[in-house]
Length: 371
Image (cartoon, rainbow, N blue to C red; front, side, top):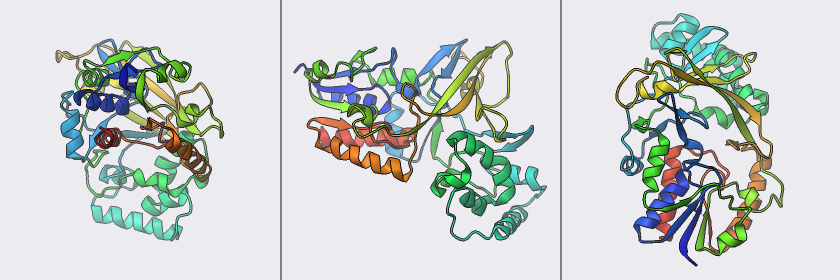
């Protein structure tokens, strides 16, 4: 045994755990099947712009401990997430706030907006929302549901809103103010220099092997360490012996444009059903359109995102947290709990949608328990 810990995966969970173990004097090896560290928060530099290769990642948290921890490894800028919705050429502010209500109904005061929402909720007469459509209408009324939620959500999940569970929509903030900051978080921003640099700082002084597929070389890799920290898909670890868990995947079409500004905002969501992509991300606005020297960047990079049903070989993004998959995960969890000397942690190993701050908190908690 050459190492105390073999950490499989160099995303946030693996990198934080590895850092904590190394700081306590443990010998750690981190492996990743990709040619780079940082998992899905990997950013690569294109035309001086840090491109979020696996989708937009905006750090936000109310957890002071997590914020103090992560800012040891990177300085964060003051980026605020204020997405825009494009419904057939009409632009609306997201999250739903007074700008949205004014554009939708011409209302000017919070009182008028509240009355309009209340009137539409009453018309719908939904007391116990049984699905996402009913939940959304009971929160914001039919107009906003039809224009800003329905098409986007159906593209995102590949299912009719009536066939989706109500709890998915609880993430949508509704505000009777002009605050268009999407996250109600005490701390938020983007690491200056990109997320890859942040993860590289976390892994400083720790041995990392890239292009190394753990499941292909499991027998010999397991011999190297006392304990394994596994952050990959839990069903893959067990060879899909009970069947495959379902995910939604995302396909990106990224292009460099020879113009300085394509849409004037990081995120524009296309909320009609006809537009095939769910949103367009313009990466330069994460860092206010400037390079690290503060110079304006002459080009821009955009990514169109297409939501898709996951199949083996695709990147798994969002767990499909319905009853069937929940029951299957519970069976895999029993197998995982019975594994000697293996810690299962992170989004894929725990089959759950995790914000970045929750991943960090989870890795810190687990490292305190075992170290």
